[in-house]
Amino acid sequence: MPLEPYTSSAPLTMGVELELQLVSLSDYDLTASSPDLLHLLGRKPFPGNVTPEITESMIEINSDVHTNHAELLAQLQLIRDTLVQAGETLNIGIAGGGTHPFQKWSERRIFSKPRFKEVSELYGYLAKQFTIFGQHVHIGCASGDDALYLLHALSRYVPHFIALSASSPYVQGNDTLFNSARLNSVFAFPMSGRAPFLLRWDDFANGYFAKMEHTGVIKSMKDFYWDIRPKPEFGTIELRVCDTPLTVERAAALAAYLQALCRYLLERRELGTDEVPVEDDYLVYNYNRFQACRFGLDGTLVHPKTYESLSMREDILTTLRKMEPHGAALGGSAGLAHLVEVTHLGSDAQYLRDQFGNSGSVEGVVDAAIQRFRGR
Image 1 (cartoon, one colour):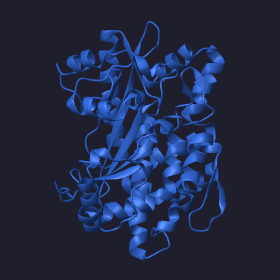
Image 2 (spheres, rainbow, N blue to C red; image 1 turned 90 degrees about the vertical axis):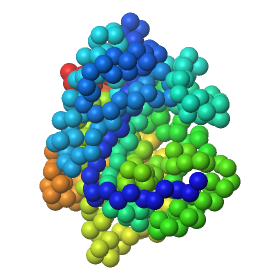
Image 3 (cartoon, rainbow, N blue to C red; image 1 turned 90 degrees about the horizontal axis):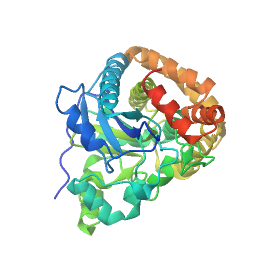
């Protein structure tokens, strides 16, 4: 069926989705507790939305639509407190982090939902290996054309979000030497990577999408696992590269950064500057993304227009300073300040490695992540 029309929404509104780990407090492994947790949470009002994810060892929480950082953070903190209380009732821990440090994918159970079963049948073991945990950020767009412009203009900043959110250094009990190993699992899916370079919604919906649907490869936008994808039913673009941070404070800060960048890019388009995206911007895209995944804040990137090699850390700090007036106008200054601190002190990936050094075990790493999510 044809792709639905793009729903106009209030520009620069934002919402957050967080995929979270459900952990047994007895052995710190993942536990298939989402049916019990969802049942418990369904018995009382929940400050947002909570849904199952592909395996029973994870859940996804969704914020409401917000206009500023303070409102978003307050709701995420309320959601966190509600989840922690429910988890204590069931003797399970709730944690962020892009991967669980030592879980075995073969032990996971697919959640009983038709789409999840369909994905499992199509992708085989990749479905269970998709027990990884990401943050998605939605930004409201007035039109489909605005959505595609922002989607491509943001490509230059995708490595920033990977490096700032990186929280998945451990897989199967080993340090991968990646800061974000989670994205390696996403890249295994055939419809991952970047969206095609189209700037008009009509070309995307009636050209590209219609052809892809005709091939039978995809049925809906959900079949695309792109780093950034449009969501016409919500009237948003959705950034999907972030690991789930260890705290909701960092999750809210990342959303505020994306909101400020979108304001800046829309303003630059009106001024007709060189920020306008072109397809050649993607020549260095995969290299920059790899640098962010592998080395995090210590990586380098190549500027897509000048081909200058840049320090990831310095480029992020320079951009955050540039975003200060936009953050102030949107009520996101505190979020940007949080990320400046992260850039100086280190990411969640570094924190988890430090916890392994302190405890000497991956179980200790999980315990530290649980305590950090609680705000302790």
